[in-house]
Length: 291
Image 1 (tube, one colour):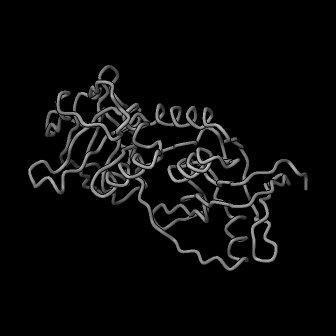
Image 2 (cartoon, rainbow, N blue to C red):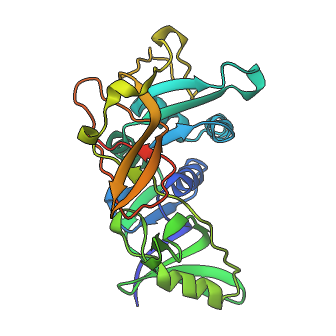
Image 3 (tube, one colour):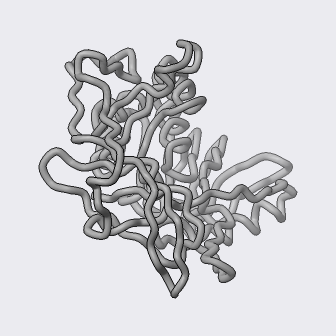
């Protein structure tokens, strides 16, 4: 193995959790490194590119109160902001924004690059160096060794990831990345218990296959009523998406009629968003749009 660096804290994974962990450690003065399979997936949102909502919106506010990045990034990159459950009491009002997925990634990547005491590495961590019950370092797939005093595992769905398409399944991660199989086996060998959590990727629907005139309009909040996630956002906010649509329609795939409910389908202010639907998704719960 080649010794390539020494850190106080090593964070494995650059999703929502990894970003906040690395940023917090670095801002507290610890020499920190964050590892990701690819720099293009820092802050990536492969499924539903939204921030907030019931329960999750509270977490975003708490992260912001502790000096985190998610709330600021959401305010800087949102397409549409809407306070949910306005018809109910204020205790259940939930702020939710649909974000520009690409801009969110770029904003987060740039924020990490500007964070003092933080270094970003594109590498797969495959093994932990544990001696006498204490973590001493991490090993990459190419044989690189980084010593450290603490390791934060924030690999998300890549850890032991498995893709299910109908009755077929194979090892893999989001957006075509490979699963972190080696790290999964190493953690198991060290006695770390692992449990599998299910996520569901919404179906992609082609925009030209939808008759939007038959769907209900769900506009965002008026600009004068928009509320930011972050206490540090002081600039005026403006909804960039025209509206969201909701309804039910039928499509046919492999000779079988499927009933799909559209929860939201954001339309950009200038360029209409293109939507793709995968016929392999037999019972999708919602259809999302990609720019």
